[in-house]
Length: 365
Ligand SMILES: [Zn+2]
Image (tube, rainbow, N blue to C red; front, side, top):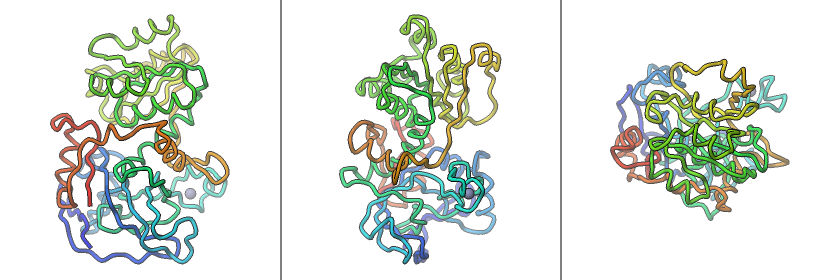
């Protein structure tokens, strides 16, 4: 089968590799679509961010099948112990794979497992015609979702965790700083748990227009001071919960303002700032601003959490899209055909504004 194989940072080609027979607890998938993530593109470029160590280790060991943790595939073969999935099921992978053996996993706190396996970093992902993965990592999706939506579901599973971990209550005022993929999702999720009003702050008028169509209240940071605006529109109170959804280098965001400082300032005394984005580098916000106003800075769990008997946040993400309570299709703006266009997809995802892309590019197999 064809697979993307990396040999050094920034160097990849499509090679003919053997398919892997599924072990007892694994399934083999035929891959339909892969959505790249910004993190994967930065790692491919050789940037020193999270997972850089495992990527370097694997490249040092020889040609490596890296990346491809956001995908849509169909089960074509099941290992003999697999009962959760059947041939023909369409699936995605909501998060990392907990080890199952450590003190956290055996205590039912698999979100905190220190020995998680990351698809596409520790083991080969879906940048291939077929992928063999542990069944425990996968969730079946309803037929009403398009392949493109399924390939874009993984970030929503993470957003679901951010909102479920937050103290947001029905009737609360929420604000979201940054309407990238996860910011837009968190804002819609805040409405699903009963937020009375959700402000969304960005510098991109197009994204704010999309948000307004979903009942969110846009604030354009190029036209007004977003913190002043949130106080003005809440009678001087501020937001109960603020989602800080700007990742990467903070100086590149919202016209040079520090987004975390903005989020802290927008939270009311006793409020909470939920850190959604993964920040690269150090922060410059004042710890005193949090302490004196008793603001909680919350860093949500990652992976997948149980939400009830037989259900978890990975399943919930699919249900929210299937019922149109959360929409993700607006951020699927660019697709390329075939694995040969992997580097083209990386280029679009890395330089979105140059291509008028608002979300990452997808590769159609
Ligand atoms: Zn574990």
